[in-house]
Length: 90
Image (cartoon, rainbow, N blue to C red):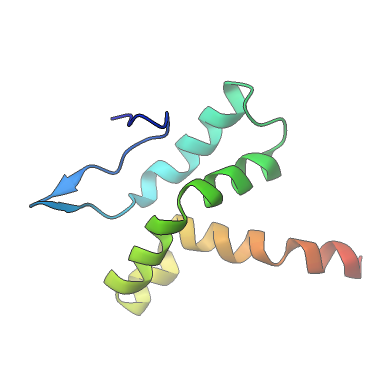
């Protein structure tokens, strides 16, 4: 479901907003690329992470360590967060 911001909504669970679905991460990044809103995969990833900062914080607060480490958005954050250092080293 899309909210007023045009991004995918995570929905609600019993009056509380549901956690970001790991399965939807790549689909939303693909949508950013296919719609032309992002020109590169890196740009789409950055846009996704910026748009879902609050969702990422809620994952920290609500998932156990194993689920947190396996969540696609967290894996993306960890990989994306180190790219500037990797680029500088290369």
